[in-house]
Image (tube, rainbow, N blue to C red; front, top):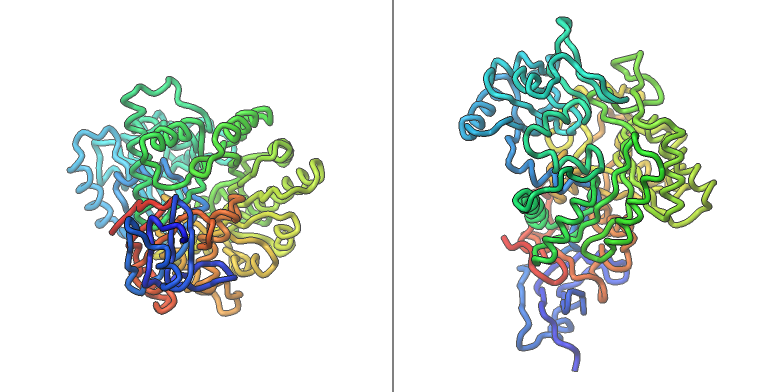
Length: 555
């Protein structure tokens, strides 16, 4: 007599992502693992008196989404901020900001997210004077979707001590006006960090800004507030079918918060938190990364990764390019690490057996990271390191084959290319320049060259929805007819959010597919993905998310 299941999902169109059994009609779960996948009759043999049965109504069932690049703590905090995605023109911006401000009379600093670089027009950049006209008497700041540029009004700049400028590290800038005062545009974290600290969300940003810990130690009330932010983020992830998260900023504080949530039974997703290595650190700081990796290594909460930023973003000219920007011919950007600095950090992290994930958007930054990984391989010997490069928005022809050769993963985001998911083409496409278009956001080119390509959203930089991301990958449009087609098939895109995410985490033997013995992380959808028009994929919504055999979201 076979063991009976805790839960069976039947009447389903299951995309297992398992090449041995690619499709199935039913799946049985017991003790947090998959016990059977197959036809309805065979799986129902596992039904017992206490087995819960879920009828999928003929809809798709897929492995739980693995979000391979996101910012959980910050995303959870920003759910309460003003969201400006889709807002265009001064009048629409003014109305949105004033309505938001009216509902929050006691907020010390008002925050908004998702303001396009072209929110006013294709040619006019935001200044503090625009924002002063909207809100002259209360501090206000709004972030670009990429989170690398913030615009602030005069009151906010005064409060943050930024109005008269400030000495900053490489790659950071307070844009100054002809009158000697700040123009209102703040590029990169050192520039706008003082404003975020004043919002009371400084602890949220530590994993991104310094990689350090809260000082002083949070009070019990502050710790509870931070846990509530994390919980809100986890609920948002589960709502979108996410069962595993590879976070891309981190410190011990985040791990401790998640550990407390786990002890309370509220950890809705499996989470990996990295150690964030900054350019003011020296390689001996990686001892903390090793300690984090040793302390947290369960299937629910783990570390073992080192996150690094090599450059900024294209739209603020802070991404590092091999050749100058098309619209700024005297500028290639400024790297956040010298090559010597990065090589030393990469060699030491690799020696410790840690995985490395580096934000590199410009082709110059991508080349520097590959050079560092190559230096680590030469020094320490080749191993299954699965080091990663995050974003790779532009790459040179010469560097394309190096990813596969070095075993480096391409961690890329389908919502990011201009023209995708409502993003404007300008100013990005002109900044990249026509001759670099064929090698921009080149998922297909990298995959065809043998690189493993893993997909994610970079939430809250982009909307979290993996299904919208899958649609963006499948329906990717060329900017010019002569550009190569970079789109993915439905199954390739789905693999980018499941199979490849598991591989990126060294967990391909436990998740990313629906097969017996794997973790019971899966998602029941509202429709059949394979029968849905590619342009309508976003209409298929999560109905039930299951992580570790437990329902974490139910529509």
